Image 1 (cartoon, one colour):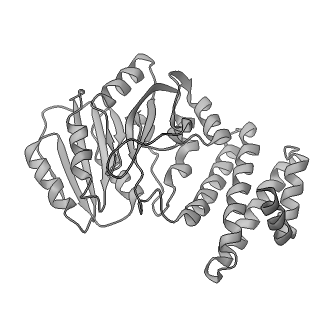
Image 2 (image 1 turned 60 degrees about the vertical axis):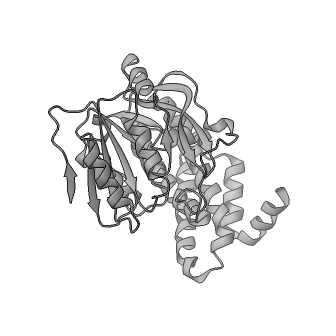
Image 3 (image 1 turned 120 degrees about the vertical axis):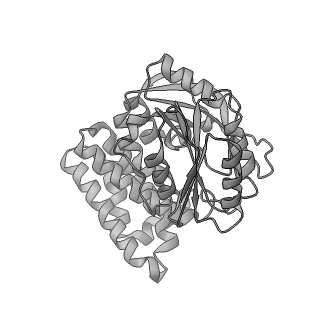
Amino acid sequence: MTKWRTRKKTPELSIIVPIYKVEKYLDECIQSILGQTFTDLELILVDDGSPDACPQMCDAIAEQDSRVRVIHQKNGGLSAARNTGIEAARGNWLGFVDSDDFVAPDFYEKLYNAAVSANADCAVCSVQLIHEDGSRMDTPPQWKVYGGGYTGEDILKTITWQNNAPYLVAWNKLYRREVFRTLRYPVGRINEDVFVFAELFDTIKMVACVEQPLYFYRQRTGSIMQSKCTLRSLDEFWGMVECFDYFMAHGYKELLSAAEKRIFAKLTGVYYRLSAQEQHSDAMRQAMAVQKKAAKLLRQQGMLKKKAALRTMLFQNFPAIYGLRRKCLK
């Protein structure tokens, strides 16, 4: 069921907020968007079957501001909610905000101006980490972006080689609508951004970067991003496998070694925690077979370094010995 008031013209921006069990933080999030200095926007609130007061809160806010549209749907997860928002969006530009976060008053004005000035398909800003109560945390330097314009391929390489979080995540950005003409987030995944970044930045030609931390990312106990770390790492493993296949199919040979390295790191990171658990044993065997295949493909093309070949051989044939070696090197 969708509720909205008719608007006379197409908004320039469509901001999509997936919502599930965040009544404590929801109002702060929504008001930070409705209070933007850039006012030509629509706010799409996707209630993903939230069992708390969030659905009623969304409807009440929509009654007060004609820019707000509310979509209620059965719980399908973050990706399903984002995809619903993408389908409903009417703006020329799309943005995502997680419902327990908030943004600076000039967040979208600065991203929009940076993107238009650089004729970019995407704009991104630095991130400020905050505690559950909204107070600022010391934010590691890897959450900072450096001002200027970069090609989508530049960002693709940066993510693959360095795993830079502010480039990888969906929410501290503004995108031209055309970027999501066919691209959608994979439903049922924990680490959905890893699955799409290769195609996303292959589609994007230019990225405008704003150094200021204009997005406030809440570190919340039990949130999607903080819980189930082991399964999240396994999910990231499968995301990198898809990226490896994408690089192979689209001629990004210079990124294959970096992708294989991350595949191996994620696999070994979860193997010793999950392989002993019967419910995960089949998944571990499948994951090991996939990693072995990726290493073999690189070796056949002369792209697998000796050190990488040796660690793969040791892990695949003698995982217990590799595990002891891994512990000793920590």
